Image (cartoon, rainbow, N blue to C red; front, side, top):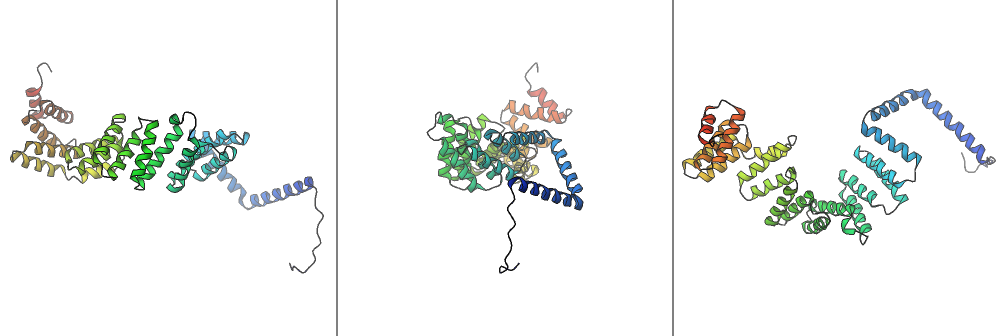
Amino acid sequence: MSTEMEVPQAPRLPADRLDTVLNYVVLLLVAAVLGLGGWFGWTIYQTQRQERLSTPAGRALDELERQVRAAPNDVVLRVRLGEAYASSALYDKALDSFDQALKLDKEHTGAYLDIGLVYMAQSERGKAEKAFQKVVELTAGTEYEALNARREQAFFYLGQIAVDDGRYEDAIGLLKEALRMRRDASDSYYFLARAYRGLDEQDAAFESLEIALAFDPNYGAARYELGQYYMDASNEASAAVEFRRVADTNPDSEIPIEALSALGTVESRMKAAEEAKADGDLTKAIEQAYVAVAIEPLHIPALLLRASLFEQAARTADALSDYEAVLDIDEGNATAVKARERLAPAGQ
């Protein structure tokens, strides 16, 4: 339309008339969509909804959405809905829900903490760091500051980010702040150990890993890190034992298996043990046998070799344990049966 033409203005409609017209427009649009395949779209929506409602998490999410629609100004519900979205990997919806919560309560530390976690899940560490720092700022100087769980978590995640970024000195300070509030946090000790290793403070790293595993003996990441520590110290036997424990408690992880594979084959380690034995180095022979058994725990020849070496070293209890392990695999193994008769205390 030419801008030079004089266009007559239509009279402005009253508000109620305008709403009526808009409603008719919407209905016409909906009718057009339905005519062009709306049934297909509606079927997809219904199918997706039924699939979501078929799981407990989906039903919980649906219920939270209903509650938020009924109480849109409830900040707690907004945060819970965001957490439900995040647990379902619906990160954009989660962030929107947390933003809505912060519009209702701009100092809600739980929302900021959750925002940080969502950004970490998306590998956006810079944005996550800002969110966690906000939690630290908002909880500073508050009553029971040292007991604030969100503050402790914020320091922990800030420490983890610092470790991953190679800012080890910063990480140590942040993680120590987290541990000041929660002294039994094995994951804080684990990342503290990584920070110390990054600064080549091996003794402090080892001590931190020992504490982490004292609180959680099956903490795979900490035990794997301990194995790496032993490898750096040229203690292959201890490293192999740690890698095997990680593999046994985390059967779906390839990482400890790869670490064990890097140590060679069970046959090569048995050969090294036999050579060390022939050279009169019983300690080295036992170390090589430890690696062999760690590589293949059910390998009967390796178990029998280590058991015989234990016998030679007068470590009767250890020898008997290995012979028993052989009998658990092969209850008729003649060598193990005779050894048990020979070594077992009377009456057993």
